Amino acid sequence: MNEGFAESVAKFRAEVSAAVTAARRASAEARETSAAFRRDTQRLAAKSTSAPPEQARKEPNTPDDEDFSQDQILLHGG
Image 1 (tube, rainbow, N blue to C red):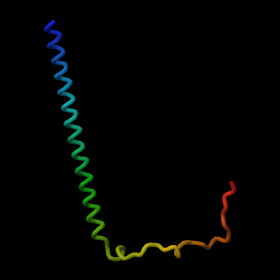
Image 2: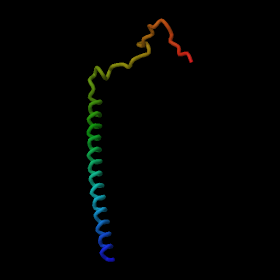
Image 3: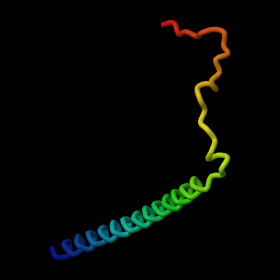
């Protein structure tokens, strides 16, 4: 009866060890992914603050720029 208990304990310890190893790997991968996102965010932030003056001063499109040259109004019959 004692042998069955020892085997069960050994199996349990092996499963716990495998789970801990998998958790450590997942944690390391998550840290790497987070670091990559952080680097990309910093790079994009630096890029946005160093925009050329022409682009920084460019005015947004106004409604006057829309194309109203069509001769007919398209209606959807329902």
